[in-house]
Structure formats: C-alpha cells, structure tokens
Length: 179
Image (cartoon, rainbow, N blue to C red; front, top):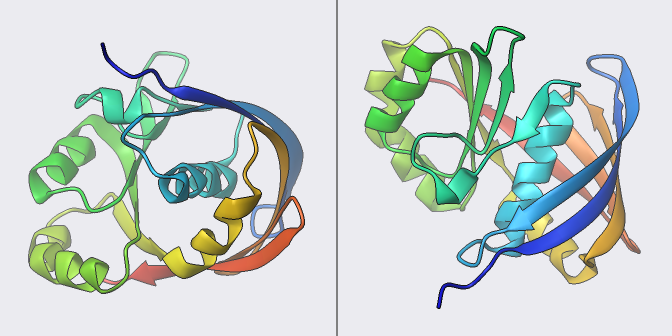
C-alpha cells in the first residue's frame, strides 16, 4: 500500500519589496512521502519569491512531466517553470524548451557547487534560465516550527527572505549562481 501525501495549510504573507507586492496567500501544500520538510519550505519560499495569481504548485515529485511550480497563461502556455534541487541538464533543457522562463532553486550545501560546475557550460547555451541557491542551514532552523496549519510571514528584499514561522525567525539568503 502506497503512502499518501500529508496536507498542510499555510497562511503565507508575502511582503515583496523588490516587486512592490504585498498579499496574503492561503496555500494547501502536499508533503510527498519522500519529501523532506526542508524541501517543502523551499517550495514555499520559491512560491513567495514569484507569488502571483497564476502561480501554482504542481504534482511535483509525483510527475516527471511537471516542475515544482509553474505559471501558465490563459492559453495554457507555460510562462514560468520553477524547479527545486539539482535537476540534470536534460531536464533543464526540456524545461527551457517548454517554458518562456525557467528558474532553478538549488539547495544542499557543497553538493550545489559540484552540481553547478558540472552543468555550467551547458547553462551558457540557454538564454531563458536563472539558477539560485537557497541557504539550507537557514531553512533547517525553521522546520521544528512547522505545524499542519500555520502562518508564514516572508519579507523579501534584495537577495534575502526574512521569514517568521511560529516563534522562529531567520534570514534565508538567495544567491544567484552565475553560468
């Protein structure tokens, strides 16, 4: 018998000073049985960084054909494809061919540097992709405060996300990795 996803209800307040967007987003987020709390929070931070009325979570880990998040137009074109982790270059090329813009949020310490160095030359050939790194240690400090229903407050300014989750507060730095 397959394990089912665990559902979380988040009240995500986004105060994005970079894009001048301030809005409350009620989110229902499924935590896949093979997904960590850190990865789920990384998905939520990626959502906060690109929050809009048309951005949505996908089947994610349950589907090889979809990213973690995407934004589609009214004509069902993929405007924004957001991946988390360290996807292989074949998946990145496919995403760049299917979407107007691709954003990858990598996390995982020194493994990110090795992964990025391994695909850096291939990334130079792609014009519609940005790659960033989340500070995994900062994300880990928030996981003890995750509850099935909770509020997350994200203040975005420059390359950092100031996050309050329960009684925990941290700064999650978002570094752009150059090709």
